[in-house]
Image 1 (spheres, rainbow, N blue to C red):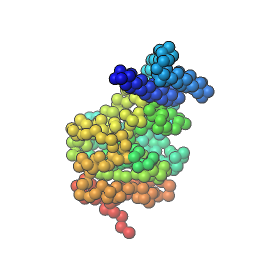
Image 2: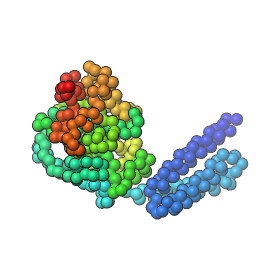
Image 3: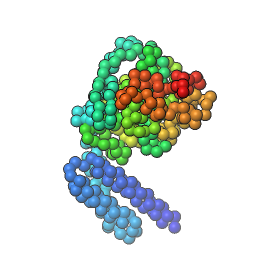
Image 4: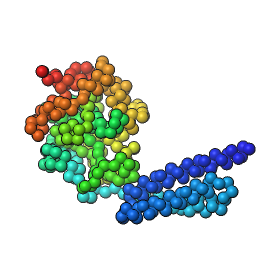
Length: 352
């Protein structure tokens, strides 16, 4: 009796493993197999047929010959698939979309850094824009603030995370971990699981990278001032620059789950803020503000719901436009009425 139960459990686990491997294989073949769609459909059909035969052999106790041969064939096909998968490597020399065409580079002398390829496009619509890649200079000793921007594009649980550094001269520099799309390529959440996109780190002016989300794409964007001491701000910015250098020298794939706009920031922060706990909100990044709030990184004198309401910047971003162009005081405008970590307001609300 016990042996029968154990054998049944083993068959169930084996069937589950085949099911998971088959689903992964279908995704890998669909997103990465070169050639026409008909070829992909054909190969995926063969793969699924082999999986069904294997599942049938596993589920039938007396079909030992089918189980033995189908399982051997399935494992051979799986190992071949895994071997092919390892040949898919990331590259930096593709025909990239204009907004991710260049990579950030920098030089550092003490506290002084020079950044090349800072993006500052003039966007009139998502399809009508003037490309501008700039060289900018910053002094790390003049770092004064770190803001977290969370941009919701697919429901309350899924959001894009950006980090903006403020300097004493009133300038802001925003970093965003993004997919590096090829020209005429669209984002796919599922494709992000299957090496469809390389990883890109963009440094940009807020009038570019924030305004496109609020005023062009219609995403709901929220800004939160994070309480970090100046040395930690400095370390975090240097971590971004080191990541940019690593991606330039050693390209990586974007992964929807493990290597994205939130998990990479978490990896940068762990050496700076020891003891950061793992949390489901690191994967469901729409809930990331609650994670930072619970750690005391935001203004805790106000409820999180109040910070959420005060931090919603869309109306202020749209109102700041002059015609169809970004205002020079865009960064100040979107921060009006937003609390700092100590409870004071970053900039007073606009008078009515």
